Length: 236
Ligand code: DC
Image (cartoon, rainbow, N blue to C red; front, side, top):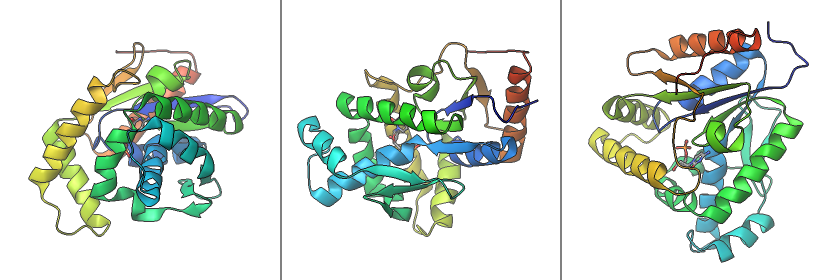
């Protein structure tokens, strides 16, 4: 069984629209541990560059600005609420414009380096954590107790993302545009030199195309419990 004192880092990586966020929240609740949305951290950096009017691709401007405008989480909330300058960012980090700028931010090696350090520091104070992103199992926590890579057909991912955007007040969403944006973002995430989106060796690959969200959560929870109990299985 999952022991309450034991370190337990569970990483969930994969492209946009595989349901990583919702699955991470539910899995963390199911296991009774915290969760970390690392995409929200990159999105906060993108928001900060927009507010400050600085070029998101210029590390010499962005890294000092990151020091001046700290990003953290309110850990009293589930899921933990991302904050910039101590203020909750809410839906401001979910706009289409942030979606474009964040791709630029996420490709800057110096920004990625700072994020990796910040995520490892978080794991020191929250050693029982489901950490979700693109490089969590491959770069940030290659020694995590359980590492998952979720995937799904791009058209299904676009459908899910469009539904999620509509549910959060973006009513005029065109699914074809979402698909285009997803494919462009996947290509950038996969091709960048540092921390590319990849299924790390030893990670467990799960294709969610035909799975419901709860089904994915149950599968992951089963896998985590099996790993903690000593029956290990990787598929990448
Ligand atoms: O998961 P998301 O859509 O909120 O991620 C936002 C962007 O940040 C996306 O372009 C991928 C990038 N990202 C990343 O490069 N590394 C992470 N660990 C998390 C997100």
